[in-house]
Length: 541
Ligand code: C2O
Image 1 (cartoon, helix red, strand yellow):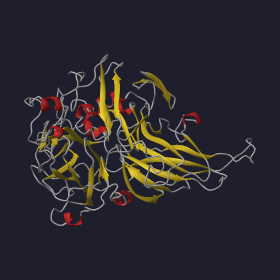
Image 2 (image 1 turned 180 degrees about the vertical axis):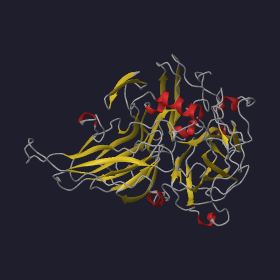
Image 3 (image 1 turned 90 degrees about the horizontal axis):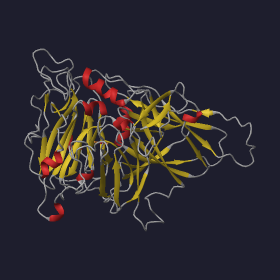
Image 4 (image 1 turned 135 degrees about the horizontal axis):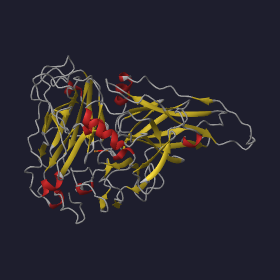
């Protein structure tokens, strides 16, 4: 625990090595990482390495009660995994309750050793700067999560967004020392490693008077494109190049982020800002320089067309060096409705959520409570009985028009239900937002895989016409995708990683309400297609 002060509120919070945000991990593609996590706090905890493929190392993935029991007070666990075929920016975060509000940090994967001259498919930047967005709560986030569970109403919103833990100058009681400052040289190119670790909001980000070039998302290169504003959902990362002005500009610049907020929920509509300033040329005296401060313009809170347009620009490189490995044919096809259940429950119906009958968030009307023991262990030892069932409905029980008026039947049921996939099946999932509580964007994250975003659209997915428009050539490859508000997104992946893999909305509110499910990927025939046994120190429940 550590005392941290922001916005004139001091609170004791869970930190890693006393740091907030947590320590930055820098590794290289191909490295084997051994990270010992010792729990010195009163609560249970587990750590997830968000976006790491964890090929046959599911025991190190980290979501509590999915791949491991949480690490209890006084206990420790060594996360042991190898980074295979990935380079770029990812992050790590607590994956238990809402602890990720304070427990998160950057995970930077540099290209393989030996690639010194041309490490990237773009000119080598002068400097690389991690920029992590987060949320600051004046109160203990654990109090908020219990409120979210008990009332079924929207939880308290955060009190500020943060850049590298700092709220910036636009908040009350937040001064210069609580502001992230990036000091740059004129005429250079910087690589900004952007990470959205916020709990519940997608964010627009922009730097006044500077355009940026997007080169990578979720640790996968994309065809570079220039933009003034980026959109980043919780769980997503983006590497962008910032070219500084050729000469000292006689100005400083705000870099700012605020939410892209759809739906009827409450949200924090404030703005976090940092400052971009140029090194003073030697001809300036260091005293009495007053330069104007320029501010960026960010889209309106509900600018869905900006969001759709921005995501359509993301294309993988799809060259021989970094091929887009998108499955061209599909073995298993799924249609998932994603949304919040009714609250209050319609008359004469039973609605359930992980904490009783008050509320629900669901996939195909199933709200997913966490089991009392880890799914991966139950699967590995063949003890699914009483832990999970393999009857996740692959189609909605009661089909309806997802974007129209609320249908009569919105009955949501509890179930720790999974889908079993044979090893190496090629999978397509259409995620359809429902409008039962108002259309809302959901950042969907899949553990254990990258997927390709082959299509997206507004309204109801049309299984006859929409697939003809799918991009099977250079779709973006990622681990988290925003299901469009009032629309759908189609993803494909190859189930080449045996184990149990969580898929969930990366809004902690929705995740807590049950907006999640899990895939059980069976072992393949050959020894190198099987999940090895758990490490000896795997925590017990
Ligand atoms: Cu970043 Cu299941 O999480």
